[in-house]
Each structure stands twice: as C-alpha cells, then as structure tokens.
Length: 451
Image (cartoon, rainbow, N blue to C red; front, side):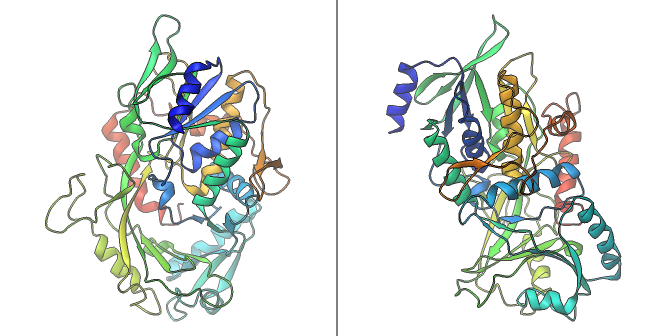
C-alpha cells in the first residue's frame, strides 16, 4: 500500500506538499489539523507506522495540567480539551500531589493559588481522604496533606494517535512508511527545502516538519545542532490483575520523592526521577532501551551507576504494600528534555533555509496543544490566515468538530509570546555542552513541584 502511495505522490506533484516526519501523537495530530486546509497536501511519514516505536508507544499517559510555566499549563489545558473529544482517549480520574513533610505541606497553598490563577479546579485535602481515593498508593500515616486536581487524568496515546491518523486520511492526507536518508535543499533559489530522500526514492515537497522525538537531534545534525537530549527513565508495570472495584485511582505524584504512580486498569504502574539523570547518546530503533546493568555499560552509553533499581526500591517504601510491584516488568523508557523544559515547536532558522520545521520534546500532556500551535504557525506561514486560536477537535468517531484549545469554549491563543517561548531557535549561539547540562538539570525537576 505504501509503495503505491509513494508512486502516486511522484506521479501527481503538488506545489503545497508538506511532509510530516514522525507519526506519533504529535505528528499524527499535525496531520489531522493541517489536512483540513484545502490548498495543502499532507504526507505523514514514519519508518514504522505500526507499532508505535517512539515515546508515544510507552508513555505513562498522565496528564497533569498545572505547571509552574504558564505556557506548559496552556498547552496541557488545550490538549485535555482535544482529548476529551475522542471516545475512550481521556479518563478523568484526577490527580493527587502527596505531601509527606511539613516543607511540602507549606508548598501546597502556593500550588493551589497558581491553579486558581489559571482557572484549574483544585483543592487541598486530608491525608485520610487522599488514602481513600488511592488506597493502593497512599499510606495515611506517611502522607500529611494532598493537592487534588479532579479534572486531571490519564490519556490513551494509542487511541489519540489512531483517531488523528483516521481524521487525516479522511481529509485526504497520505500515509507513507519509509526511512528518511537526507533532506533535499535548493541552494540557488533561497535556499529552500525541495524534498526528502528516502529508501523509496526522492519525495518532492515545499515544507518538512520533523516530529521525530528522541531522534530529532541526530536527524537534524547535518544542518543544525538542536538541544533535544534523550534521557533514560525507569518505569515498572506490576503483575497483571483484575480491574479494581469502583473508579480507577487518581494519578499519584510524590513531588518530594520525585515518584509517580498510576492505575493502568490491568496493572499498577510506577516511575521515578529520583536518580542521577542519564543521557542516551545514541537511541536505538525504539524508545525502549536495555535496563542499565551494574556490571557493564550498555551499547548506547547508558551509565552503569544509573541508580534505577535503588530509585524504584525507595519508591516502593512509599506504598502501603511495599511488595505491590514484586515480579513486575521494569523497563527503561526514553524521552527527550530541553534546556528550559519547553518543547521545540516552530520554524527552524538555519542558513536561511526556508521550509524546515520541527516539533520535539513534547509530552503526551502537551501533545495536542503543541500540534495546534505548529499547525497554526504553518498555516500563517503558508498565507492561509487562521487567526489566533485555530481550533477544532476530533469527536468520538474521529471527525473534526467545532471547539478549540483549552477548556470548553476557550481557544489556545498562539500569540507572539507563545511563539517565542517554543521557538526552536531560542538557544542559537549557545554552546552545545552548556545546553546539554541545562537540559539534564531539568530531569529531576520533572518529578518535583517545578513540573
């Protein structure tokens, strides 16, 4: 099928062809949002359309909307509004931030005030109530207080990605399974992007959007150094079990311990940031890497003193049953961090080359909102107007419906401040080593109150 799609693209040139490289949740969202514009032809390309080999395929799926950075909060709110339009994509189980020390308790009113400032529903609750909401994850004798976000939840990235792809296809976008080998640039007229070299052949296009996650820096390295740093992260699924009676547990965060837990329905899940940040220099073909061995370094240069096992064991001590994850499946999932903990999303400025775009280091929490931002900027760049906000969603059967980013009735405003905050060129001129150190410094804060 994909060979025929490629042949059709070659036989039928299009002046406004945009190729999106990377068909995870962000790339598929972009394909959906851009393919509703009649002058554009959208091609969604990935080396593996099924299964999902990037971070989308293993993301824990927690969507906590409040962030210390207002831009990330806006992107998360926008994403939740999009996800709730897709049947089975978003489970509003709520979220709990558990305070286990007096210092953490003192931070809860600050977090509550920030939530109210952004009109997010939140309340401070007792340890007993938190334990009642999540009895398998909260010990009332250890917890002191908690901040409850009833509208937070968990997202099914696989369902969301499939819905966006289906909508893109319905909008006449073309899916292509191929491997990119090079970008094609016309140096005489611009210079500008003119196509992609792939294992199937040369594919002409006017714009390329790389939504390639942890592989972005490596792919773009011939043209530009972009500080998208892949990092290793320990997560464990408990043994399979029957669904617990009643409503699923809220997603749990222990910010002081940099640990989080969730009810997957079929099992329990736990992840930890409570260990030294570990860069993955050369990610493999999937976003799952070998568990770091205490006896040797892995082929992908993951340090053998990662502290993964110790971090998980410290997390187990927070649980009412410290053996809850006994016999479970621990794995090393890779995702990307940046020097300021914000995604890269927008047009890339490199040697004046026109037509090169990127969206990278995007969590499921912010994926739909970030895709909306990039789609809006691309439409403006193509002279299609769009205005500030642009937003329609995907309904329960994969059709585009009215609405927009943010809570119901609101729109995600893609203003100049947002554009600059996500601009892929914002660190231009800074030293690569400095940027990597800055990015790695954010890793542990992801699990704290800073995220």
